[in-house]
Length: 322
Image (tube, rainbow, N blue to C red; front, side, top):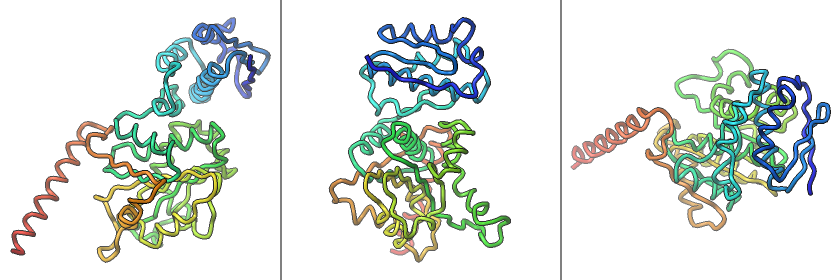
């Protein structure tokens, strides 16, 4: 029998455990071969390793939910238990729990392929249009790797391309100028890690979100690294980033080659990297499409409409040149 302790620091026990530990009793019923014992501000888990890992994930989600709303109910626990992984559910089917207790998992076949490719390869390119979940799933995989202690830190970066605005004229210091470019990554992290804990992890550089220029000269070891919006990297930037990869690291490169904001004379570092590395062993390539769009249903329709318009425009140009 394995034993594990969960600390309930800065938690009002009556609001978390319930009257007469009712919340814990509800949770315990789903794991009859294991025990959950309340001892002051600690919960002691006893049982087999598989059950204890599942219970720990559920308790972690409940703690996150408590810090968000200040109370846990039996309904919260029952909702999580409905989605909890059974004995045959793999990490490909459930990535992490969100702060509201929801299970974050792949929602399409290509998202599933992305998860499996990351499990198999140390470097993966995920390419597809907006709304296909490539960034969100990648962030979830990074958070899972950190929680499972497979890496010591998370590093997430994006190129800060001046899409119609000059950074030099924007107010604030460099961080304040580039933070808007990194906002999608922050948003994803906030769905998976409670605010105070995320702040602590970032202040201690366990999680780092920074513009791509900050990667130069570094060796990114024992880390889960995400390069987002990679279609806006130059050839030099992409080569610089890829050669930062260190021992015991996982790297995901995401991008949408239909939304390149670089000057017309510059080739996308992402497009070139895919062409150069496509036959290299140990690198995964996942292509997502409109069937993977998981935002509002209109997003898929709009992407298809724009793609159609682009094709028609190219066709007209070809006809004019004939």
